[in-house]
Image (cartoon, rainbow, N blue to C red; front, side, top):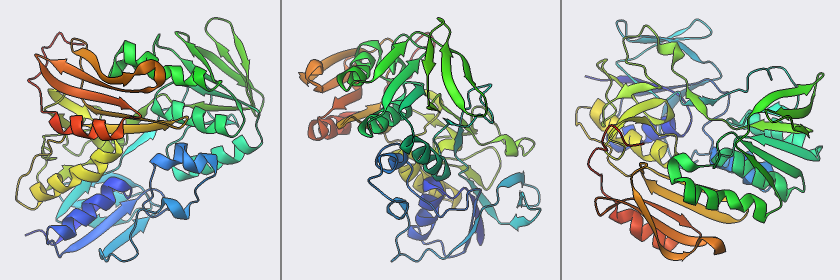
Length: 391
């Protein structure tokens, strides 16, 4: 019988797991371990409202003062080793947490740009502390260079532009967001930068970030030198799973699980950004770093841990707010899927596009079309696995 559970990770996925445990009538001990000193907080506003100064740290809190989860929160100390044999988690301070089962929710960390370590004015954005430091730097800056035109980079550029900064975005790929959205509609989303006076440079890499103790410029591979007061690096994230090496878990760009969150180690499940879970939409194991996934998927993993196997089969979903425009995407596309506009006009920055495979809708993209997007999202069903040659 499971009488104690350690939840390793105290962000949205960890909090969602604790809530799911109580909602599924688990009345045993829950110990939540968090590397950050903060209670669970909401990350999406960090690159938007918080950075723009329209929300406070208190506004980010995820906890409900009226709920009583009876969780033993152990914050500010990271887990460094999982010992399945002794059913324990070793923390950085040398202490151990013993439990009958473990829920892994350690999330991911922002990738660094090599050669920028210790250079003031160069930021990544993943945590509350990151956002606090970046917001302070932007308040005294005039010129921002963003490396990476993915959703985080675009949101930071949008927020900085609203603060009056001169912003340049650098993207190594010819078309931003071509991976998840395809080149045609990725270009439409990228067009928002030019619409709002942000400079976008594509198909070029970063050769060096220069300065003394503080950043002064970004040098590109084509020889261009961009003066910069602040640089934000948004080139993706890596799962926080190194501490699990030697634990017996299967690690491959995350903790490998099945669709129910179960790992190869009994009484250990993985959830959220650190889990590489089987997805029928992708036809294989993928790591989903979306807010909705961290909110919803833990309920299935918790049910599985408590003895009632439940697979998480919802279509992947994410959204982004940029320059006052809401972008929403659900499902999973491959390079062989067809796409058609079913409503609106991309040139007017208001449209809905449906991606189809063998005549079935497998993904949907909406720009400023929230109601129609919601209707189409409900129609998505898991596609047949894509052929191995599909991009």
